[in-house]
Length: 282
Image (cartoon, rainbow, N blue to C red; front, side):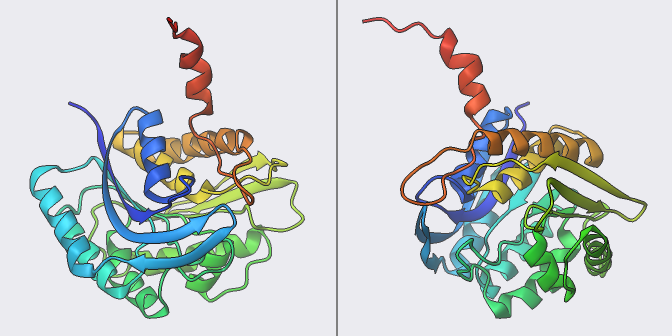
């Protein structure tokens, strides 16, 4: 049977993040992609100009009708934008509490555009946290959620434990929660270290900082890769380790596009492996 992953996220017309990037990652890793769109963004490589969330009722209908027919092996959640969308997504995911859910709590764009309304954050914590298996906040998002300033790895660990406690409240998912705080935004670090906090242990994923400004879509790439590996049946530590390696290679392959920050490229290795084998006639 074909392995299926579902992404619930916004659309990025520049193609470097959101639904478009998630589908690339799933496809690269041999997973069939289903997608529920939550918002239309007006953006290019220079930043997000505007966001138009879909009506919560429409997102709920997309997801509900899909799940009547197709049950994915894992789900990735990206930008949800509004309280109504958060409510509809959580309501539908309660139907499949055994399905791994990887959530990237997209709150702000790189140019500080708000992508999750302030009134939606408390709803996100209350309604979605009990359903999430892996939460992947960056430093800024982890700081907002934990209400703690994060300046070093010790702060990341402490914030991770605070957020883990929040995920454990009124638990619905049958899977134990994991918090993966991405350390790419820590300043003055030659090594990028992500910190994973679970009920039983804390572990670290390090990689040398890559000197490449073209990093658009890094968070989407990491969370969708984790989702893909979980869908394939990997355990949590293996999924995180493989996803970290995958996103590191995608960052190395990031390329200039347009006038701003170009995208990371999860397909570079696929092109290198396969396109050179094709024979073109005519």
